[in-house]
Length: 289
Image (tube, rainbow, N blue to C red):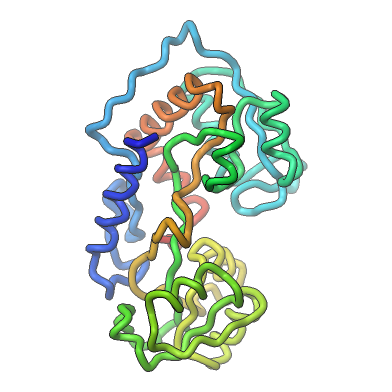
């Protein structure tokens, strides 16, 4: 776990060093060569986890939710679908083991894991002090960055604190994103909104120059619009763990470290083979980093 956190810190620092003028969709993807969307690799290629002994591998029972698209949801055919579901299936294919993926209520996932109703949770559950008391987590396979967003065609902003001293920025009231701006961006005028729908509607209506919010939520919102070219990210991602979390991994019981290590090995293999890139582009074609 300590090694994974060191790797995460190195990755966050590398993103911080990227030019702040970088706009999503204009940075080449290092893993692909085919896409202009920046796709980070969260796995250190020099780290060589020990491959699990096939003789010790067992079927894995994944627990998930079914009401958080595009991560997990019920498709038109009534079957589970989504990014997390595809990652779980890819892991099972990589490990060559049989798997089941069982939906549970979001607020019952950790209790179901503790009660041995499943072996692992893959449901965008953040690793926090509270969740670490009930489970252990694999290395993160995606992060939850914050981003600035403007209407399409807006001028390019210098999204450093000194560049936004006179800006007006929309935020969701009471969010970690509002708290982050108040802590590190002392100059701008912040305009709070009750939720993302109202925040983004006000941005499109021209009530302020920039919005600052969860990049995944904004990307989902943009993709859902009839005019998906309405808005664009400005600058790079903000990934301060104290505000935006340490990333999303797979939760297992604290006593099941062998499964955690097995999943870490399989996640790294999927990343090296480009599978994680393919899944990322399938669900986040405009990019979130």
